[in-house]
Amino acid sequence: MAVVGAALCATAALPAQARAAGTPDPYAFAEDATRVDGMPSTTGAVMLAPGKTYRSSIREGGKLYYRLELGDGANAYVSATAVPRLGKAVGSAEGVKVTVQDANGHRCSSETARFGPTGSPHPVTAWASRQIGRDPYMCQEAGTYYVLVERVGTVTSSEGAQGTLGTQGSQGSRGTQGSPDGAWGLELGYVMEPLPKQAGSTSAPEVWNSASPAAVTGDAKRRRGGSSFTTASAVAQGVWEDTDGIRAGQTLYYRVPVDWGQQLYATAELGSSSSGDDGYVGNALVMSLYNPVRGFVDDATAGYDGRQRSADLDPLPPVRYDNRFARDDQMSGMRFAGWYYLAVHLGAPVADRFGDGPFGLTLRVRVTGSAAEGPGYLGTSDPVGVFEVTAEDQETAESGSVGGATGAGGTGGSGGGEESGTTGASDGAQGIGDDDTAMKLVAVTGIGTGSLLVLGLGVWTVVARRRTGVVAAEHGVAVRGPGHGAPRR
Image (tube, rainbow, N blue to C red; front, side, top):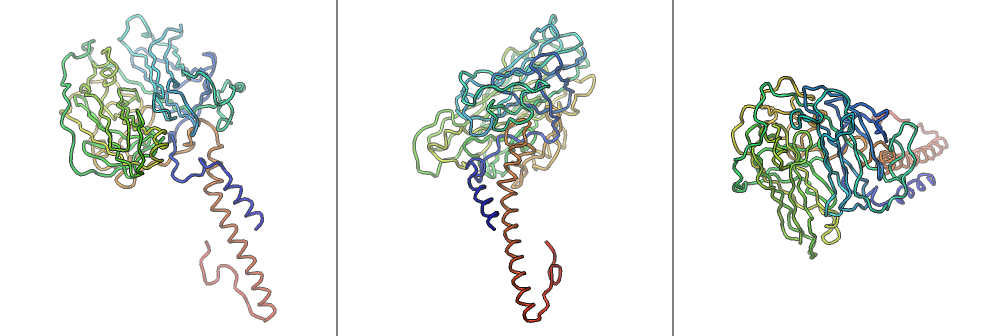
């Protein structure tokens, strides 16, 4: 009993953040993600296969290379989602940059995603591509290409000096959770898009309906947001209220099927506070839109003063293949049919003035226009079905049933579902790449606590039975052992 008591005291002494009830998991990494180590040089860089999801990690100031082997008959898209550890401060200019390069070091494309002014660590996603036909002189030949993932924007470190690399050049596949290098988890997606059967226009449409429609009204249906791309909750046109609301510092994911020729409009509403506090938090709520390959399209922000606030995405063009030739990133991002993702983040500073929450969260989603024919691809995408919307997808969005979605480099996770969605994280959902410490901590704080309580009860039972046996022996009374008269547990 002394041992049990000591263990329980040790559990109680763990950091409050690790054991606090209701602390949101920052990101649910894909359960089928393959763990890989990025290399500090192109030499020895591991090859990524299309249609798969990968998991890695990156240290402060890190630069990691991964290898692609590309033909000349398809477009390649690679995304990287960076996930800082819970409770670690980040600067608004910090983030992750993704670049695709050819074998001669020429840049095919790149993008940087930063944490922005919310002042809280949360998953951020950037993408890059090799696109056939965009530049006739660059990145068009078949051969070896490289993906470069970098941490950017760090001015000073609050996490300690960067440690030495392992023998395989890993930026922290082990020992990163709580290590002084402050590594972030990485989830990499890789999608191949075949070329169209017929070459069409190489310029973006100049005319489209840019007027904002009337907001969707009516009673809200209840859905629970997911905690990553692969666990994003499926929603269709309508009003959706998150079952559990959103907490300060949390990011919730939803997905919407948008077919060729259709337009997407979305609004996120943060409910009023019941804390009675006052004050103002600028850029408290951020809603970001990502396309089917997890490419950033646009975002909307809203401040918060305790009263209900909303963030509306600007009108976006209909989904068209030719949008990819636009100079405007928002228009260029609307180049695929498929599942579009809404990531809603509530800044951690909201907790300082209005408490941790949860706060009410409502989504208003509208999809206009009739589905049109796509470009007609020469082959199939990898993974299959990324750039199409099926009847099953529509049913999934309406009902919240499981299945029907494919994501950037793997099959989609289950939809949230009405009243019963998934926000729980998969393996390693504590937000760091390849470390088991978080899961061990969960085991100690969750399963371990329950096991210790059961152990304590078992000890008491044994003591009681021994005492009973002694008394029975003294009086000549038989005592039944376990399994007599009661089922085993």
